Image 1 (cartoon, each protein chain N blue to C red):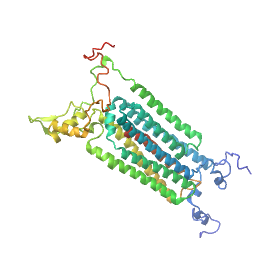
Image 2: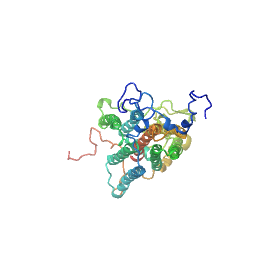
Image 3: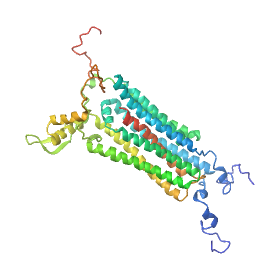
Image 4: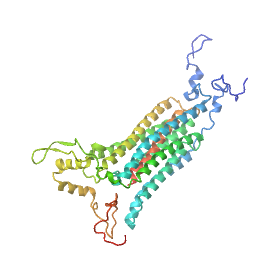
Length: 234
Length: 233
């Protein structure tokens, strides 16, 4: 109830009808767009253009993998054998499940199911934590302690090829940049979760969740290619 | 009063619908994926993941049972094909490219074309580097030269400090392990034999096949081996 004299405008957000409308209903398109459809399409196109640059970033790693694999196949066979397929498989399954939950989160925003939107975002972030936990504690730490390190830091005395430091370089850089993308994706999703708590997303405005979901799906697609190349193809 | 569908350049939203009609126009083209589609998609992805691992293990199993070595590219092609199918499923359904404007698909396809150019020309070059010009003979050395690699504090039998320069990083790791952990080369080889597996140096016998990788020794020699007295060629 406002106590200002009649005829004067009240402070924004204090009118009774404004306080019952959730944030996603009140969100309007930016003024340079015709309507919210155009804004959504523009945001999506911009995100797809950014995703193409991310794919090209990882293409550099994949070409390095291909080049060194053709030059030094014994190093690739020896190095690939020392990776645990079980860990790679577990990480693949975790990322696939997280892709499912983030797609479900977008669906929940479209259907105005606020509770499940937040739950699915949190499950996706938890899957990211599980992925990083397996990667750092079960894969990176034992290997680094063993001496299986890239380049001049290499210190593993039982190797069978002189070029194994190159394999470890490609392995650490490929999976390391991917892990960095997982961390960034988790941060973006957590930011969306904080906005979801304020009911910023709903059937007419869910651009943020959609864009964060696209980034996370790309992280999953990259891992879909990294897993067979590093773990399965000797 | 202007009709709602006429575009008016003076109105920032173009159709005089700001404030009332916005909600009516916002549902066009926004696909809501049904839950059954999401579940079918994740099941297909899980199945293909298991299939990739199964094919990779199956190649080893096939080799052990029949003794035939499948060409190396079979495993690579199958694994990457399954990975491509999985990626297309994620892109089309989870990222909703199938339900989206075709422009987004065109943007991503052009990216894949660029990657194909990148990979294609690099592999074309690397795959045909089978010969070395004679003027380059002897100029290629293996690995780094290890300058600066020193084992601080270690001394050899004469009391001189041990340096590892001139070795590449792999040989340096070996020397370091001998000097600081195992003491002698025999002890390291004994430990190495265990790590490498009992069949590491075994050759194939008529009864049992042992897979080998890498280049055949002497494949690019100019002269035939001395013992080759066959008159077939």
